[in-house]
Image (cartoon, rainbow, N blue to C red; front, top):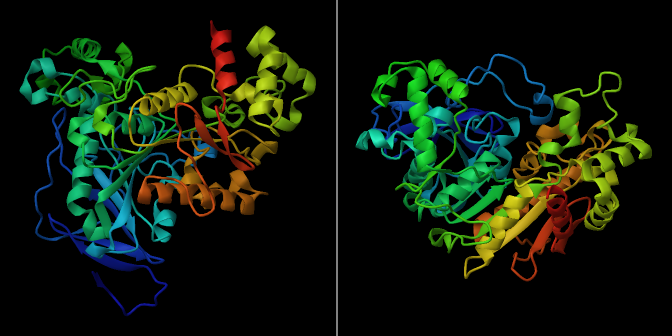
Length: 517
């Protein structure tokens, strides 16, 4: 490590590392070495990524690299209030960039590595889209090296043109294969950042959680990571037949004969055509890169990941959070807060909403909810996700993982109400990530009034992540976290009190299923 010494210790200073391909210059900020916008691979449209050739000069790594294009991004979104997102991110098809935060550049430091995969289904997002994706605070603990990555998304990452020749083999999984290439880059280079290539933990949320689950079933990723955390995972796998039919529709909409004819078209044309035909963007099963689904509901979990400990989490509110209702749209212009603002909800209005949602089962649902989440207002059950997505996926993954002799699985739900707007359920995007990544300081306006309590909450959660990354077990000195088994179905409930609860939410999901029939 080469570091200037003529400035005060507190000053941000340049720092360099010598990688396999060349020298990088980042900066040191409050003892954390930060390297942003590192090109981990090269790519061409619809082609698999390639290693970066060696360079002769010193490359700077001071700013984030561009995100994958994701359509127009030319307006301010109201979701910024919840997500604290950075709009108008730089976008470019050349988007394979990594970011690293670490307190050491000594190869023998051997720190656990956490590789973060952003959310946004398989269509949008970036490593720096949200302010609380920053890895500085976790790195400050000196217990891990934090890495985040961009990769190809949407029509660029998940268009299956394999029937048009070997050049397009596995083009339907390029977004996932980019992540494999990022893992290879970590394997080859992370020691120069003080990390241990033999101890890599994948962490992803929402679409990122789905990508983590997909990587567990990809042969090319085997051996490149050793633990996995899937937060509110969204799995949207497609068959190759369906994917290729949509790829053909895309070419017809673009009025071209084959994917080679698309090379000269703008991304805007591609995106518009994909939108017109309602193209789905998700990994493709039955392919060389992703032979079969990682897990099946009520069935098996891939043997590829039999030795990888897995932690699966959800939040209480998911997509239906009342904070989302208040900040995304106004439903009733005469009384915009009546169906969301907690202090404004009368008992009579809650009864009306419960009946609308659950009919004759309303009393039974409330009773089960109050037993599951004691201390929560009964209105909070109105914002639980009741469909076949987050909680359903969490349970299906865990049951498949523990149904055989596998490495241990762990489960958690984040349920602590947020004080903003008089008390709300945690939102799906933004409810748990900042606390897990120790970035509660980025949520100042969301936790105001309970700042100290949420700081402690964040430390407890992030300590568990660091322990899991180090050992494959999220238990810490202050928190005993049992594995999820077929018998116990133990779940850590991060609420105002932090507790273990067996068969958590089982009665609620049973009722939700009965009501849906």
